[in-house]
Image (cartoon, rainbow, N blue to C red; front, side, top):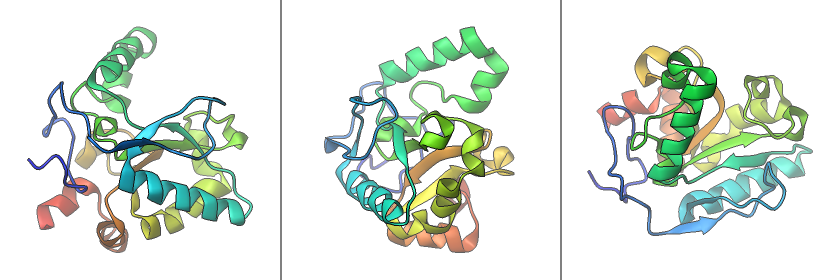
Length: 188
């Protein structure tokens, strides 16, 4: 598995090692859910996200970043905490086991808006920002990673906030074909 491939598929069946961390992580310059908090993405994804959020802002929309890159250790803490607070069933449906999280690739980002108190919530799907992202994110190389109705393919519940960078070419193909990454990776 080429870890530098921007189309890399990470899921329960395709994990990364505990030690893996992208070499080109950079701090993203967009509004953050927690003022003063920074998060990182791989350089190409970072630059695309900044363009996307700035273009949305020009249209009167307010998109903020909640999370980007997460280390194996951070994912382990999130997973364990979710089991305690939400239970195992919920955790397995919405939280990736350490080593199987796209966040560890530095290519995944969780987004929100002030209307949703800058939080990760399904209420994001009812915002103008979400609608704009659904119709435009592919132009910047992003896809909605876990769309509604794809749970049996992705293995995760619908996450209106979770976007994944795959490059403009691949994002447009995925958008046009109405596929999820698991399906698309079987074609390329």
